[in-house]
Structures are given as structure tokens and as C-alpha cells.
Length: 216
Image (tube, rainbow, N blue to C red; front, side, top):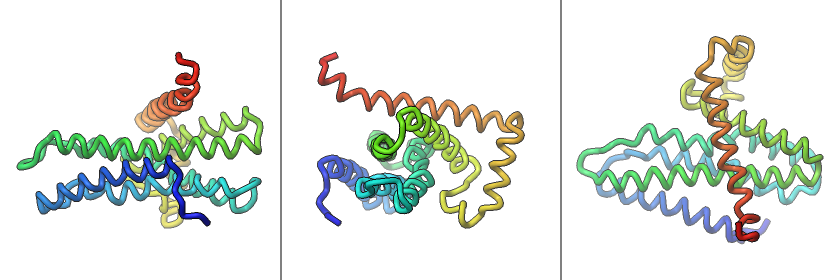
């Protein structure tokens, strides 16, 4: 396996490094671990990107590809989940608020772009092996499930690995959400609206190269 990074991977690494440098400097100056959760959350956000990267080595949908796709889908919500970490942003004593604003904004961007790029790569892989109608359906389903996963993580405190650690509890909660949706309106409204937001970002970014080439 080549360790050489693509130009895109180098830019993403630079972006993440910028955030980590901001965080390290903040910790050094304040002697606190405030916003330290961005280290772990950014690591989780990078997992779907790494999974999607490995799909390029799969020439067909085989066992390895299915495992990579399953791992990608399981961890995909962790990337845009970082958007919800904006809840933690507030003015802290003895440290510039504008500095923290740059920190949390850069971290949010990292999570969002890592997730979007990973989805683009998954879509490209599926396009080589499936009809476009099914590919588009998979994309929309992934975005919808991503919104659902973000709600489960932020408000119900489930994690991606709970599918192994707490499978019964996770299955029971999901079954209740599906069988009694009227009791979980907040969940489904959040899921739908977050999926719409991600869809707008995703398809806008996909169209940018073509629009720039056409000069429109």
C-alpha cells in the first residue's frame, strides 16, 4: 500500500493540523483541556474518509468492499456530527472569544468536508457497479441515516460502537422510533432537516467543478 498522499489528502491533513495547532496553543496558554474533545471527534470523523479511500483498491463489490462500506456507513455520522459541537462554543474567561470562534469553525469544517468527500468517493465506487437510480437512492439514504445517527449520538448518547456493545438497547430504541414515530417528532424533524442541510451542501459542492468550468 502506498503511503503517498494525494493533493486532496494533503489539504485535508493541513486543515486538520491547523485546528489541532490552534487547540494545542490554547491548551498551552490556558492549562486546561477545554475543547479537547475535538481531538477524539476529529479522529472519529476521519474514519469514514479512510474507509472510502480504501474502496479504490476494490475492483468489484466483494467481501472486502462490503466491510468497508459497512464501516463507512457506521462511522459516517461522526463526521458531520462535529457541527453539533458548536453547542459547546461560548465566551470563556481569560481567552479571546474570536480565537475560540476560529477554532470551533475550523473543527466544524474538518468534520463536514471529511464526511462529504467520503460520501463522494463512496458514490463514485457505487457508480461503477450499480445503476444510477440505485446509487442516488443510496446517497439519499446515507444522508438520511446520517441525520438519524447524529441525533442518536447528540441527544441519546449512542456511539458507533454501541452496535456491538449495546445491540439490544440500540435495536429497541430504533424500533420504537420507527413503530411509534408520533412519539419522537423531535427526532424525525431533526433527522429530516439535517439530511436536507447535508444534501444541499453535498450537491452544491458536487456541482462546483462543472460550474467553474462552464463559467456559470
